[in-house]
Image (cartoon, rainbow, N blue to C red):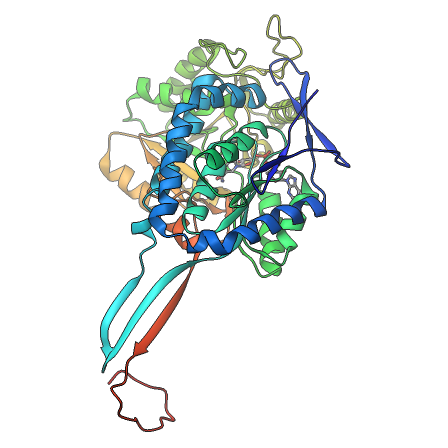
Length: 498
Ligand code: NAD
């Protein structure tokens, strides 16, 4: 069976591991590879490799670091088809969606190519008599990224491309469910001229994560995954003196007003709710329809569209979405559907028990639509992370905004309307980190910044964009003067610049 390897100090590292994880093929249900789960010693090796590489990389001038990233970007573009095939084979998302995943990663690499400009410091001449002040953004040292299964290309690129551009050296701990693409990313970075040890990849589970969170040489940790683990990572990492950003789960609300373009809105919502089998933190699994007529119109059209969706294997070019990542995850999604029924929501379309002909053992689940979902239902309050769309009916925009605002998660929200005033107020008031106005999946472009509120993110600095540079650097400020030979008086009070 194919065995996936770590990449440490520029080399693929295999050999015997104490523990292995299974990498499944979601299309068939078969095990396609095994992945070593690093113990503490293996993580320590990777951290040491990054530590050894740091002095030279952090002293490499920024335009030379940028040149590695430019070449890395070129190689990603050159290999995008191969990467997409690998990604779809382990994740289960359709090829076009995998290409989007990789392209979104490339966008952040492109942003990081601007590091000579982004990392420039500040300078004030004559801040006092003969005194100049300058500040610089220094890299932190060895840093780590821990990533989820659902974007195995984009999310590692969010983290490491900005971190290494800033002069840090990096240990990536990708999801053990789809580890092949992260390994390829590191190989391409090396091929692009990235020095060995600057970017390393160790596979593993909680054991590896805990070692990174407590290792004295790791200065910062970026995490993306589910909220309970994000909160644990934040608490443990910060307790060990590290800078931590930890992005968690989501339950994004799409508010539909009576004056929206209903046909366009239904198209947008269906794509955002069911694309990638709903396994996106910026999916739109909840619609809040304002007014009975709006809700009736939406549900009628959405039901037809959902019934027409084609579920297929990830290489089926006509499929709208593929299987979910594992049998266990499918089981979890199906149990939430049962919960919704038990809680009294109206099941309009049931995707449970879906079998794809010829791939009966694959982890498929059909599109599912609930109407009359109520805020007190647990199936509404929790993240399902599958192809399940829940419709909540309210009477006013205020009620709709209140639902998104008071929900435990606050990643994103969208509003569909032709009223600029309503959209402006909603965008201003709603308590989430990212808002779409007639845009169903408002993932910000790379040079802006990505991050949610409430239980969708722990820590207060976002991913990529200027916030990313801030997260991966620390500021040093120098106040200097060059006395011309006169000896000044001893000063016993705090100096002012007068
Ligand atoms: P997950 O939380 O199961 O795993 C994320 C990472 O944590 C993986 O690398 C995994 O190996 C590690 N991990 C798993 N169990 C652990 C434990 N007990 N202790 C320490 N580390 C552990 O998440 P997932 O299932 O891979 O990804 C889906 C989740 O990620 C969803 O909740 C989704 O909303 C969220 N997500 C959030 C964002 C965002 O930006 N907010 C983006 C993508 C995904």
